[in-house]
Length: 515
Image 1 (spheres, rainbow, N blue to C red):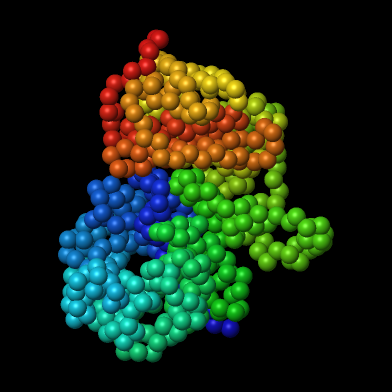
Image 2 (cartoon, rainbow, N blue to C red):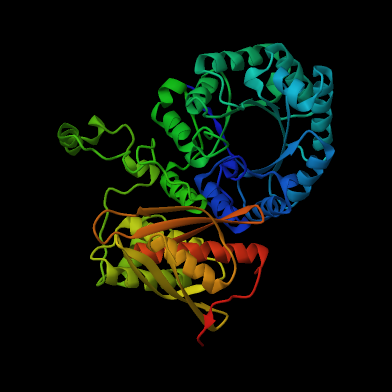
C-alpha cells in the first residue's frame, strides 16, 4: 500500500497568536518554535513581519535560531510586505515567503474594491517579485472556499507560472463542509494545467466545528500539506488542531493512506507548553490532549482497559508522550530521582537549570505530600517563562470573610529595596492586586484572571494566569503555589514584570519604602 507523506505547516506563532487575548513575547515564540522543531513539523510560520516591529523581531529570532523546519513569513500581495518578510528571513536555514490576496467576490467588492482582473494581476506580480529573493514561495487565495472555482483555477495557474511552489486553499471563515471541500480540491487538481509543479495546501478554520474534518477530506482528495495550530488556536473559533490531524492520520493510516513526519511523542508536551505560554486552558474533554482523553470512568470501560487497553483506547497515551507510570516524588526524593524523572518526561535541561528546579521542587515537596508529573511539568514551564524580576513578592498577608472587608498587605523587593503597601478589595484576590498596584506606584490595567488546580487533592498546586494591558498591548503572567492567593500575586507580578520589560516603568513606585 502506497503511503503519501503529508507536510505539516504549523501556524501557531502567526494565526495562533491572533487568538483573542494571546500576546506572546519574542522569547516565548522562540520557546514554542523550539518545541515545534522537536515535533519535526515541516514548516513553521513564524509571523507577519510587516505587522509590527515586535513581529519582525520575533520572525528574525526564530529564523536565526531554528534549524530543520522551513521558516515561513506571511506577506500580503505587496512589495512592501514581501520586502519585510525577506528581510526577517535573512538568517533562516530554509526560508519561505507566504503571500496572499482574497479571491472571493464578497472580499473583492467590500474589502479590496478590486476587479477579478486586478486581483489576478496583483497575485501573479507578488509571486514573481517574491521569487526574486526566495525560491520557496507559497500563495494563498484568501476565502477560497467562497470563491468562484473557475476563477480560482485561473489565479492558481497564473501564480504557479510565476513561480509559486505551494498553492494554499483556505477555508478562511470556516464555511465549507467536508464533502464540498474535498470536491473543491479534486476540481482544482483536475483543472489547473500546471498543478504538477506545486504542492496543494489547505488552511481550515473551525467556525462550524469542521476544520479537522475538512482538512482530512482535502487530504483524501489530494492535498499534501495541511496548515494547522497546536491546540487549534487561532482567529475566532480557531484553526484545525495539529494534534487531532496528526493522530487521525496516524491512527487511520490504512484509510487515508497518508502519514506525517511528526514525532508524536512530543505532542502532549508541546500542547502543554503552548497552553502555558498563551494562557489558553485546554478543555478537559479536548481530543488527544485533554485531561479526560485517557480517563475511564465507566466500570465496564475500566475492566476492558485493564484486560487490554485496545478495548477502549484507540490511541496509546505513550504515543503522544503521556506516561501511564506516574511515579510520585516526595520531600525525601533525591536529586538523582528528580533528574531521572525529568528525563523520563522528555525534558533536556542543563545542570544549572536542574539545580534551580530541584530547589523549587524541594520547596514544593515541603508543602505537598506527593509531587506528581503534572507538578513537575508546571515547575519546568515556569522556568521556561522566566524574565528579569523588577518586582518580586517577599511577603503577603490577607484577611477575608463573608462578613469582613477583604484586606491585603504586601512586601515587594525591587532593585535591592523593599516596598510595602496595603489595600482593601472585593475579595482576597482583588485586595492583593490593589495592594500590589499601590506598592508599585502605577495603575495596572487588569484584563482577565484565571485560577485552576494543576493536580487533584487538598494540597494541589494552584496555577494562576493574569492578563494586563498597557498601550494597547496585552501581557500575561503566571504563578504557581499551593496557596492560591500567593499564586495569584505571583502571576500579577509576572505580568507586570513582562509589561515593564517591554514598555518601561510609567512612574516611580509609591509604596512605602522600608529598607
